[in-house]
Length: 132
Image 1 (cartoon, rainbow, N blue to C red):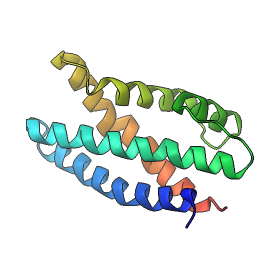
Image 2: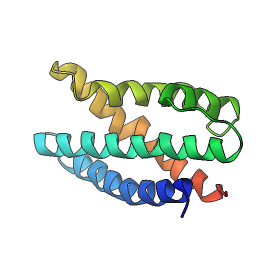
Image 3: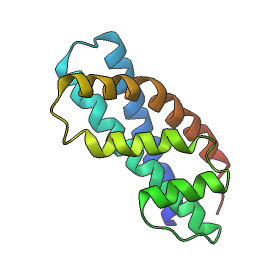
């Protein structure tokens, strides 16, 4: 099995966990453990998503290695439609483990459960068309 196939399978498994974390957050948005689960599920799901993009680009002759480069190339190649939200997700992923201001954390969590979830849900549909 290739890196792309493995990353797609892993992404799909973790997207289901992320989906469950979003649902749990929507049911009980005041529970701090739900917040933590949501953030962790997002971090893993996003990490796998950009690796899927990296492997997909590589299978099409574009070799980039850093997340921001991958996002820019994927946007340029029209693999993703909204490069800015991917940059925002990257920034959120990078800041979640280093942010201690609860107001900022809550803003990130709202974005994770809203716009970022929707973008990764759309991505989960798009990768069904990825072939090596």
